[in-house]
Length: 254
Image (cartoon, rainbow, N blue to C red):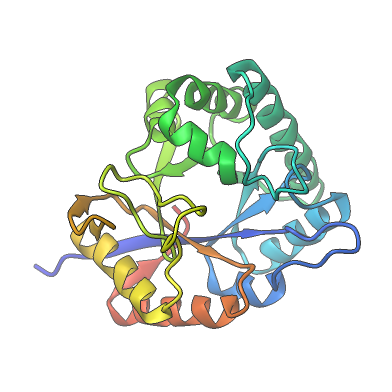
């Protein structure tokens, strides 16, 4: 019997704010199955949040909150010395902000995916991971928690009884321990779109990814992240969607 594969294709969206325009949300949304919408701390603002929620609902894309550190200058990608209690508070605050717009537009919160440094820190810090998972659980226990495949964040969500999605990245390289290569290091990003697509297909179908150390790492791929802010983001989203379909991989929200 032929094995079937299903995966979610998610993208970080709603990252414009004020006079600044980032990404091409309207072009990306028809190509993905779930959207992680910035909640105003690392990016986004009330008007952008409302607009992005409306656009996602029009395209029948699953709605997710994308909470990050309050760091516009660093786009939420700089580590911050927050306590678990502070992490809990900032995640509750941001989920609540986005849920206000989702409810106002007649939608439902599908998932929560932390952003940037908050996501990476929670991947390896159990106390931080547990605080974030608890914040999601207490605000909306039906929401899915998206976290790096095999990470402390996913484990914390599972421990609380949340639905969790193991996330993999199309355009990032991996270390032998299953973590992402730091953006501060060379070769953190895969700029060859065809190599990135091949990596995704292998992660979904074989459950493996080749690390920077040349060793295969076992990985679970429930959802694939593509970035919507690159120069060729729409082109890449179309390429990955076309190839996954060609490989008989069904695309649907987790």
